[in-house]
Image (tube, rainbow, N blue to C red):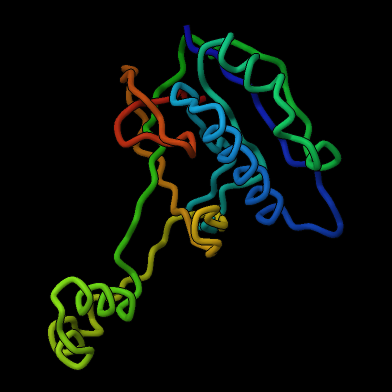
Length: 187
């Protein structure tokens, strides 16, 4: 049976909510990778799409025993002054279900050109001719700003919540707690 656990960001005068959410999700990601955990999903109940904000509320979803194991690890070390965790609860029977997934848009035209030049072994000028500046798009989704442990580079992880559905769809989650097809309860 699916359970959930809420983690709320506490107001802090020094660190805005998005900075704290980035840190919290970065720590969760590292822990999910270390534990090779693929049965825990996440959602952002306070998401505000019009402001491109994930809000200050992270909800973990999964089997009770998996969430208990997860919370017994020290992954919140350094964040305890900035968060409040709720109890392990069962979602309401009336809850809808949503897919919370990562979106990787093709946004940066220079990156696309570099990639094209490298893959097709052509000069930069030819890549510029083949990929016009008009392919660059602005993404209106809320996002996390995370640091890659493998490359050390900072990247934006865009998050999309699908429209609510009546029926749950089981499946696995990635190391960010997101899924291309599995749903989590939404209430």
